[in-house]
Amino acid sequence: MTQILRALHTGARPGLGADCVSALGMDHLVVSLVVEGRITEQLWSSDLVGGAFEDLQFTLGQGPAPDALRVGRAIVVPDLAALGAARWPLLVSAMAHLRVQAAFCFPLALGGITVGVLTASRGSPGPMGGQQTDDILGLAAALTLQFLGGRGARFETWLETQPDGELHRAVVHQATGMLSVQLALPLGEALLRLRAYAYSHDRSIIETAEDVVSRRLRLDNDRPEPESPKETKG
Image 1 (tube, rainbow, N blue to C red):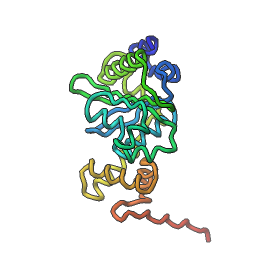
Image 2 (image 1 turned 60 degrees about the vertical axis):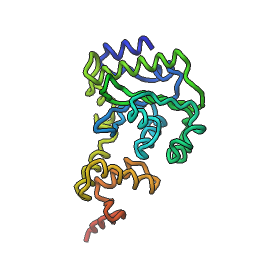
Image 3 (image 1 turned 120 degrees about the horizontal axis):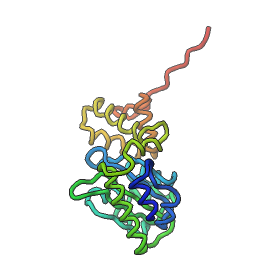
Image 4 (image 1 turned 180 degrees about the vertical axis):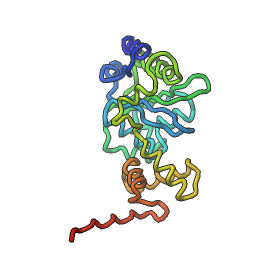
């Protein structure tokens, strides 16, 4: 972990990867940034399962990561099945297909400024050890300084790790803006409509946003628009 933190402070690229996940004794690791209010953007994920867990929390607006941002302190859940059913009922039922049984979410914050959240999760229940806790707190502090403009890699460097250099949820932000205009709603309420549609139709929020942006779906009538007929050659 010392080497990983040194890479974050001095390297030109993000120093996270399989070694970092292993050093923390976790199976999945996700870094998300706050882009507006409590709306987050998934900036980096160690694997598809961690990313899917983060996207599901974003879609539902509930879970340990949203709570960590809301209260400004770590949310530690050694056994999601035991605690989550009462605290986040929608999340626990929707994540039955994901192998995530423990989650540890740490806000990336300095004073009154919160720039994101670090989520570590594991496929088996159980608490973090003392060294693991110290390591993830050190990692959260290093990431916070980095995204606040400290020494080391900047935000643009993280974007280079994304396909096509785009934000993971760029299409969600675009769809939210379109719905805000179509439905004459503030952006926050437009995002809620998008989330509600995705959840009620058992779809990912990104897939739903892609349909809105491509104009295959309008949420004012809640029905997909028919595909335009293809031209036939005479």
